[in-house]
Image 1: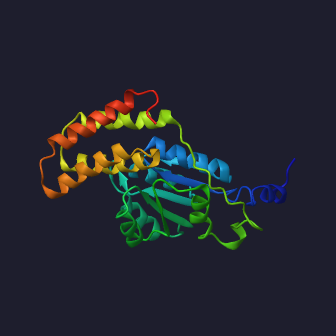
Image 2: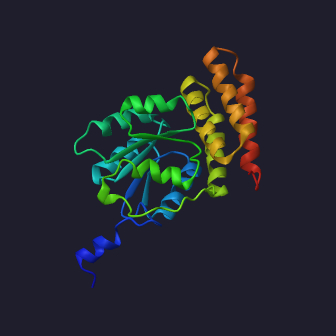
Length: 238
């Protein structure tokens, strides 16, 4: 039988598993982006829980207190900045609150809401992910000694990518309004960057730009919908 002291020692971070003992809540609607986080947590020793919207995240947070929360800035039921503000002003405070987005302008919004840090999509390396969390933890949660710097990219499951495309195809097949355009373009920009899909990212950005300028959006919506359909049907989309 393992006593409490031995169990605590087993959960302490190590140089190979620097996030051992931590529970991370990812508030992320993209299955593809969440799979990338899952792999990073797996390599780092952390446990990952997922909420796909603000409502689900608040339900999770009523039950348990994670070590860190990573919040996507564009969620289907609102802006991630709202949850960042709530967590930053609630006591006891979650130790680490990070924003994440494929939109570079979202970084300033996340920090203004009270985020401790920001992870740009795609997250560059495992080391970037680990450091974003570790730098905000107390010393007793830090691994002793030098950590090996791993620079190899994380490769999420292509099935998750296609499921994201199916989700977008369904939304693009429905009513076109400002809320839908804002959500779809932000979602697809983030997924496209994570998948290194420049064509899809460009099409999403073109729609966002046309909408912001009040220009006609029929053609940009149609082009984006066609690209999403192509990727959903292609067995080797990436």
